[in-house]
Length: 71
Image (cartoon, rainbow, N blue to C red; front, side):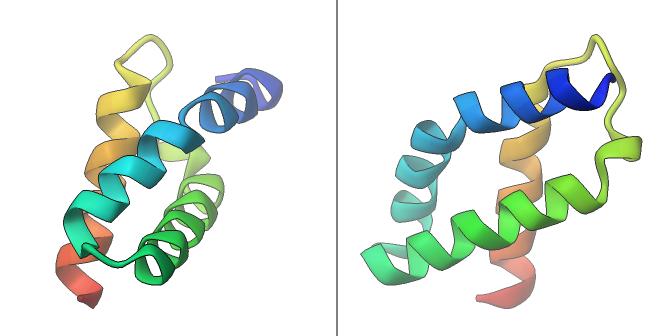
């Protein structure tokens, strides 16, 4: 995926990801931290995303896996 397209997709999902993080953590501060970790992980692993696949599902899976591994 072209970098600018990936970044736009990532930015457009931030609000939804924060809600999902809050559902996982039930704490606003931890949800914010999880969102930040997820965003950094996604940017670091952009090359692992398959263009044309469901970005929202991919990024939510990244967040869920981070939550399971860290919390």
